[in-house]
Length: 221
Image (cartoon, rainbow, N blue to C red; front, side, top):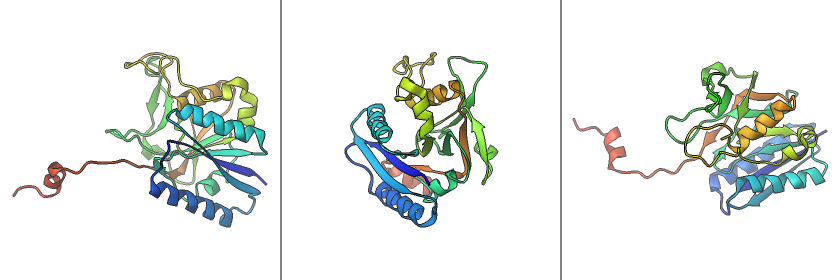
């Protein structure tokens, strides 16, 4: 009978569409996940996402929380995300979503064994079939759910951190974002990273509409 915390590291404002999505996730989970003991939400705001995650994690460590579901505020998730995840046993599990910049690569990765300065390759979305879970090497924090036993056993490595060369503007070793470094720490400790083929999320983007967009859909004849 798990206690689940939804952690939202966010800036001072979040899109209204995300708030509607969050309330729908909570309502759906409470209505359909019969084994649930409690579902709570924790937020921390500020420009440093890693700091926000660590404050939320500190709260979870002090309370009787069994799982954390990390929801990024700039995404939309299936309302059954928790129910889908909880049908399987997992250490760390996540969903398929795509980067905002073109060419919109998936944020699900496997090791690149031929180039240490580019240590990961994005998977092909067509390789993920619905109703299946797949072992991978790294996933994004958006929609990631973590068994609290993982954090308890990672020690000081539980705290979110970036690679030491993350700030560099070119390929380099140890240049991982905070989600990649967390996955690396988990793998090094013997935990599995899974992605759920049925859970697919969307990234919210802002777009400036110009005459070019009009011309794309209304070509001159």
